[in-house]
Image (tube, rainbow over all chains, first blue to last red):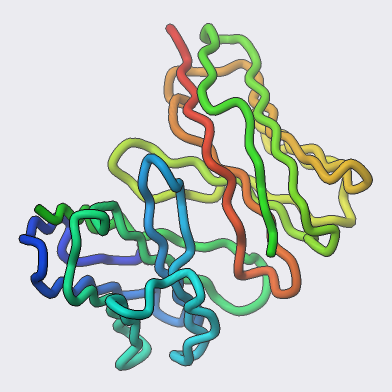
Length: 114
Length: 112
């Protein structure tokens, strides 16, 4: 049963600390998305990659957030330094090429910055 | 960019009744409209989608309608069941189906 995995599932950290979230997309999927979900803003697209190349990261605060795909099986989202307003659930999703255009979401990382 | 509005934000229905969620979009070039269901503690999951060359699509108790002229689309759930309780998101995509803009979500509660 192919699925997207994310680690850690929960993270509590203090303001100013670095946070790294990891995502393993479904094998064979070539597009990876990072979303942030909060009660106030809903689901926001932070960045997405196709064939490991960043296509759009306009939704991401560039001064503290960075996203990379070191290889086809790993995507990372890093926040440095973290702030309380970064508290949210971060989802990774992956999609294959062509039809259907379904995005498969991981279970999310719940981040709390105190 | 695309802007998707979704209503209502919360919806309570009695088990067996129908539920309707409505969305509007701003970009007339949008041509793909998926609907996702998010259960508590999980990531969203695609339940149905429609493309701009189709006006309506049905899958068992779920149906979607699209009005391109008015730029709105709707999700209809008939004979609702308690397991339909979740948050539902509409979305729209243009110029490369994979990137979508999500609506703000509708929390559906089905009362047994």
